[in-house]
Image (cartoon, rainbow, N blue to C red):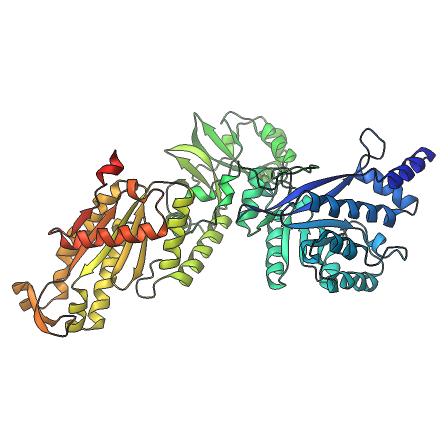
Length: 578
């Protein structure tokens, strides 16, 4: 370090000439600020402006603990002055923490003076500075914990002792090193690493924070992997006076995770590199060399896909004697797989899975092409498909009605919440069996269950493009943004009128009535059981609260039961039309 740097560092410490920048940490599921990390800078236009140069100079002069204490003081003061929401994450290096000159109790006294609860401050320990005495470090951090502070382990994966530090220190937070976040959407190995960290954190009751996020593609993958707390330039750059709220452009990730009962191939679609069929194998080889994570390239002509070319196929061809010399100027169609599975983005995941596994070939393709009206849209990966289907089945089993296996009240509420958050217009149909109680009393619960399953099967067949749910008992719902759902409901009514004959004795069917007790336990003649459907149009469901939707369902159900056809499309009030 030069004498100039020594003098400059002395001036910085004496004059407290440190600029504190705050970078947001966002809870992407709740769309709110979880906290801010305080980052320190030296004076602008000076050789020690960069935090790397600033703290390295302090370390070389033996003043690291002194500088970090100053930075911590300024960070806590400015965090409180700006009334920033959430928690304050402040960095402390193991070397400074283990320095005998490090002031004891300074952070607690400062927090108490400013009226900040210790629980709102997180001591962030960087793994980039190796700690030689882990036992002493653990003792120091336990001292902070006993005072009410929380502890975070920064840069997990950047150093050589990360897992040992994790197990020994038992931090409240773990921040994944940005190396594993950078282009995570393009590297399956990075996704596996992050997935394992998330799983481990869940079992250790530790929260994981992903830092260094710069693209929406990275953010989407992290959300899919179950990470809630995120940090990076995409969500907000470090600033002296940051906004207390997340970016308003953040709509695609702010809603709760969408229910996965009716997911289609679109949810698996990833952008892919495409080439024309005239591309030479030599050019393709250079492309694979530049992109180590790239496993397949789509061959496209006039927006229509012809097939895929795999890295492995090219390597096998070029590894043969004279393979490169003989083939490098040939077109990529020479090794193209033209039989690759191609599916429309609107196809259900179950259909895609069946098509992948129905092939007699023992090898299951790892990629498939996703189309939009016949044109190339992107690639889907079999591994992602299996993961989504597994998650679907887990959610379905957890919240399904045990009699029909249809989604129950929890997923129904999730679907309505999702549509409401997206402000998407939708039809809501409420289906109900009339005189079902009387039928149950006469024919028994076993026959009643058969009727319920019959209605569920009709819903599955005609409502396969829509969301269908079993509220309970003899009540069902169907939800869709498509107008065709109205016609599907009419078809369900018509088919049930034909199918219901098998549930009655010949005498009851001929007479179109039977003797049963009413709700007052009096014997009386009852008409045959029938199905009714009340539909609420988008003009009424749009912007309706949960309570309003419940009232509309009751109204539609009542009118449908009164209608001779058993069908009612709720009318829009005249004042609402105006």
